[in-house]
Amino acid sequence: MALAGIAIPDYMEGKNIFAENYKGRDYVISTRDRCDFTIDRIRSVRSKQFKYIRNFLTDRPYTQPTYMDADGVEFVTVMHRLHAENKLDTVQARFFSEERPKEELYDINVDPFELANLANNPKYAKTLAQYADILENWIIETDDKGQYPENEENLKLMLGIWGAHAVNPEYAPLRVKYKNLEGSLRELKNQSYQKPVD
Image 1 (cartoon, rainbow, N blue to C red):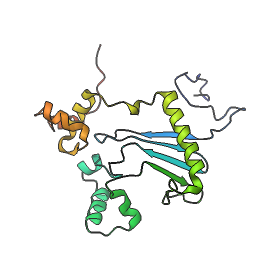
Image 2 (cartoon, helix red, strand yellow):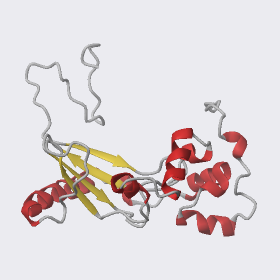
Image 3 (spheres, rainbow, N blue to C red):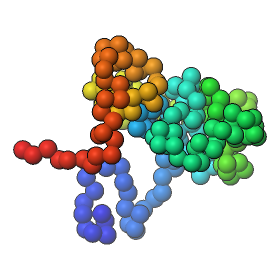
Image 4 (tube, rainbow, N blue to C red):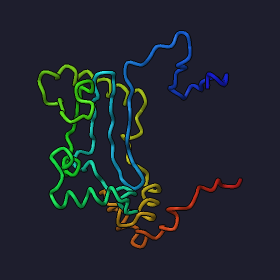
């Protein structure tokens, strides 16, 4: 935007990296909530040395169903088959576990593939607390929308399109309330967005 001479709107957090007085960030926050029909809530704080992850829904596996499962994408199908045949090593199999830890902490300079979770290591207790505080403050300051339940209309649309693939517990009441909805909107899956006409 700066190169085009466009002022950065107040609602954007971006910085002009070409400015003479540019100062890089100490950390960035990333988020994951719903991806297609899969409901989750993950937040992370990433600095040059550490990555802190908080899994809010620890009862859900890393590999929740996605459109890639529904569409039979080959590498996903192969990974599920190898897991069922016990052919994955312990690192690969971790992503099929039924639960995730509440917190994860990685020294990404030493462990760039994020394999050694340091969250329970007493040596890193101070770092863990520091990053947890950064995240808590960000949640409060931004009124993080992931802390609120998703509205029924959005969930109805996902259940209507994805049907039986929508396995999260948030869909259970809708299956009872709207008995014929599941999978009834499948034809919308591949339709492009049409802007409403005024």
